[in-house]
Length: 355
Image (cartoon, rainbow, N blue to C red):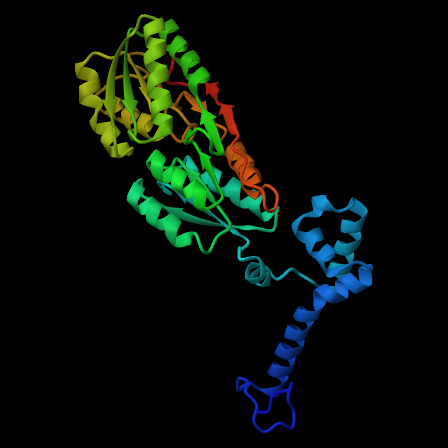
């Protein structure tokens, strides 16, 4: 089959696929239209092709009426920006990497969804990967993805501070729930609401709290455990620190005999998964919640899926994802802002507390 670009030339380097003429004709017209579109849109709008590009990629740089006119003409012509071509010319793809420690944890589902939608609003995509709470795996994933993405959202990163800082020197990075000075980070904080929650437990008669902690390398664990210890001291409540390093329901449920043995009359859990495990374990041992033991979770991941429904701290994970995307996008050529943005959670009292 002869090349349509070089009809009559016997020695042509363009080898075309063997497809029916009608199919090839459609493919050829589509390809030619795609190449010519941005120029045609610019010509029809009376602007430079670079202005058309800005209308899609950086509309804030143009007047609203200019953007509207370009978008209307582009829609009429069926034009869509070629993301792959833009990646070749700029060296960056229209994609961000989002690394989470445990994709099965219900806390991360709304965060991932919010990040994806915020990125889509900017004509960008999100590639989600899981580190399995392993800092070495997280580092390998980041290094592997670095040539393919324009930046990273690292949620609840398990990297050492030194490795985390090294990554920020090589790529655009925004941390979610990891507080490293001088970096861009968005934190779903629980300290104020958790103090209020401990006060509610005290008002309900609590005199001995068992704190069921999560992964040691989690920033959220450090914040929550220190807050509970401080609040217990303020209200003159004894506290015993237990831990579920894997952060799973089964291990939290298995802690129930220890909670009974120490005589705790209230439990504060690192998150709602652990709270759910404790709740089921207590009920299995015939202990009424909240009549005999009050229970407070954190993150509001499972409030309507337990009986009784768990009192918890509702964290603003979706809002955090949107803010993180905005920080990551920033402006062309600018470094990511080193802002520290804290979003305080809200105490949600339900059926496992007496206050």
